[in-house]
Structures are given as C-alpha cells and as structure tokens.
Amino acid sequence: MTDSTGIRRAGPLTYRGGAIPETTTDQRLLDRRGPADWVHTDPWRVLRIQSEFVEGFGLLSEVGHSVSVFGSARVKPESPKYTLGETIGSRLAEVGYTVITGGGPGVMEAANKGAQLAGGTSIGLGIELPFEQALNDYIDVGVTFRYFFVRKTMFVKYSQAFVVLPGGFGTLDELFEAITLVQTGKVTRFPVVLVGSDFWGGLVDWIHATLREEGVISPEDPDLIRLTDDPDEVVDIIHKAHVDLVRRKFEQNRVAETAKDVEEAKEAAES
Ligand SMILES: C/C(=C\CNc1ncnc2c1ncn2[C@@H]1O[C@H](COP(=O)(O)O)[C@@H](O)[C@H]1O)CO
Image 1 (cartoon, rainbow, N blue to C red):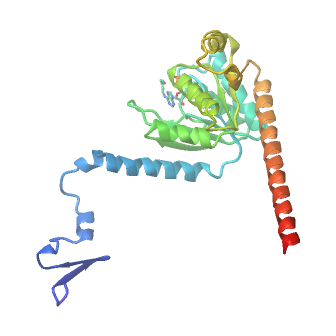
Image 2 (cartoon, rainbow, N blue to C red):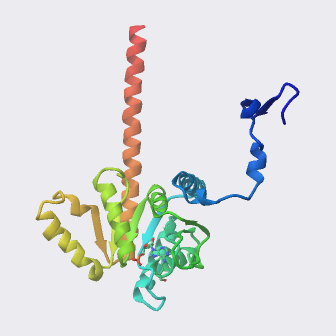
Image 3 (cartoon, rainbow, N blue to C red):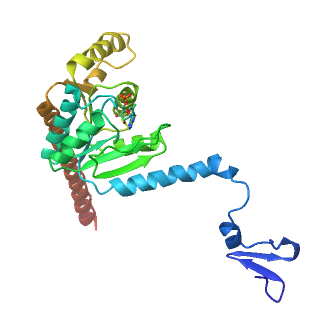
C-alpha cells in the first residue's frame, strides 16, 4: 500500500515514484501464474539440498548408537544372503545398536527386518530412483532423499560402523567411500566390516596383491577392512572399536583436564 506521501514500504525496503512495484511481495508469493522454469535452476536446487540436510539431521540426531548395513538390493528372501542380513540386523539390535540401511529391498530389507523383529530400532534412508519404489516394510523411521550425496553424509555421520554384505555397484560405492574417508582421516571412528569371505575374498586378495604391491595404497591400508563370515564376530569387532573409542575419549579428556589443572596451578602460583 502506497501512503499519502507516495511512499511504498515493503518490509525493510522503501520505494518512491516509478520505482514502486506494481504488486506486493505477498501478491507475488501467492500468485501461482507465470513460468516455473526457476524450480529447475541450481540456486533452487541448493535450497532443496539444504532442506534434505535439515530433514536428515533433524531425524537422525537423536537416534542412539547406530550401525549402517549395506548390501545388494537384488537378493531375494529365500537367499542365504538375506538370512545373513537378517541375522546381523538382529544381533546388532540385541546389543543395542540402531540399524540403518538404504531402506530398499534385498539385504537392506533383511537387516531392517532382523533389527525390528529383535525389538531394536530400524531406520531406512531411502533414495528417490527413476522407478517407483517404497521403503521396505520393516522400517520404524524412514526418510527418502533426492540426492545420493546427502544420504551418504547421513550414513557416515550417524553410524559407528559400516557392515557390508555382498552387493553390486551400489554396495561397492558405499564400501569404497567409507574406506576412503577412513584412509584420509576424514572419519577416525569406525570399522568397516565385510561379511562373506566367498564373495569378498577375491577383492580383499586383490587389494593386498595388486593395490598394496603396486604401492597405490599404504602397506597398512588393507587393515582398514575386516572380513568375516560370523555375525557374532561382526558385533564383536564393532563393540571393541566402540569401547576403544570411549576409552580414547576418556583419556583425551583426562589429558585436557590435567593440562587445565596445571595451567590453573601455574596461574595461582604467579598471582
Ligand atoms: C535394483 C532394485 C532396487 C533398487 N533400490 C534401492 N533402494 C535403496 N537403496 C539402494 C537401491 N539400490 C541400490 N541402493 C544402495 O546401494 C546399495 C545396494 O546396491 P547394489 O548395487 O544392489 O549392491 C544399498 O546399500 C543401497 O544403499 C531392485 O529391486
């Protein structure tokens, strides 16, 4: 509304004369007409990406200690790999870990099912795909992301460990992202456990015999991955790493406290 002196105020802005817009901000906000190309522009995408981070952080920041389980979307419920996923989901839940998966079918569903039936918390971080797909039926808390990289941040940020069952490209992508983050020191806290020596043995051998021998990774890098067939050992590895972490944090706090005490004693002596 333009006032009696010919001035239009819009929030913090003041307009006069020819600069006065023909419509108000509210009118433009509520007007659905006009081209909609801007919803496909990068600045708009940035806002959508931000909102995915906000959703994800909001949803996951209050879940307890969690483990992400990865593996093939194509494994059928009759497969021993499905049973393995279910057993691992259930063992993790029994010792108090929330189980996080990609929310899809196959191994993801198996791990969610195991966790849920064992009375644990079962989370699915789904991904929007070109074909229609709902989150699996064994998820207590779920969210579907548009962007793979936002979803990956959630897996890493809210997990204590990655457990990787047999899978294809998607699983390999998740596995190698995790190892790279650990190798480069971007995350320090979690073990990466491969389950299924028949399936993963060849890859682990190749990592030793080719990557390590050719010098494209450090001699100690293969140790970033643990390989087992035993669900109990999976839990054991994760539990030991967790205990280690708590111990290290305790030690760091104690060192910091001691340094603070020494500083305070010095200051008191000097005053
Ligand atoms: C191919 C089929 C379904 C795909 N649905 C998926 N839903 C959720 N997450 C998925 C899906 N496909 C891949 N992922 C992610 O990658 C990993 C599995 O990929 P792989 O290539 O099957 O190994 C998995 O951990 C997910 O995070 C058919 O029904």
